[in-house]
Length: 297
Image (cartoon, rainbow, N blue to C red; front, side, top):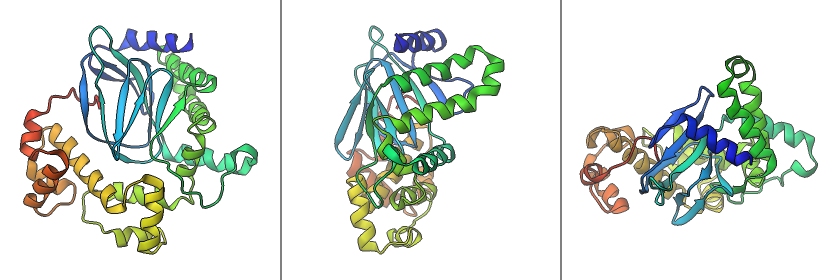
């Protein structure tokens, strides 16, 4: 019943093939009526909840397919391929995308640490935290509906939006994605900090040694723990982040040289070689063949 109400809210507000702003910081409504093959993207900390249709994200060769029974939680910046391969005019995809405010999530994770009990983590646990599929439980469903209802109440929206977002974040941290998300937003998670540093320095040639040093690890220990957490080596992960970011820039109309420089490549020929090795096409061929509605991945 609650998901049906959320579906009706989206249908009443969003035209086909659109990513609609809501007036709520970091909250967008999704409506897709055409199939979109999975394409390179970078997910920043986010939750994507689908109320109709099926969405897919691929990370390191593993496919995460989700619908109205499970939402996707991505607590750290991740290089993925994403799309809506089953969407059509007869069976549109409808959903909500919620950016996760790292300051609020970190604050809640600390408070839950202090509360202890069922929320206490095992210190030094580096199990995988990249992409999580989580059940639509009652707390998440109710919090999301209350948040979206603010769109029709301007006064309530101005006064309550931060509280409703905090309630939704808390539901996420208590749900199936909670343990991994709390670990990712903990101030003591060196791998999450390393990924944040990679994301912040995407436009320069930062080395793995620099990242390891900044999070207080030797290169060998950093490599081992990074792969435990993400399934990818730091070098593979960083290259995927750079090339996926570049692919998104090309999709937005940027030329090849600008896209290469924008992700820290000093040689456009090296960039083109590595891009073709990863995606099977040169950057120019890829951008010319790409047909994606803006923001739909």
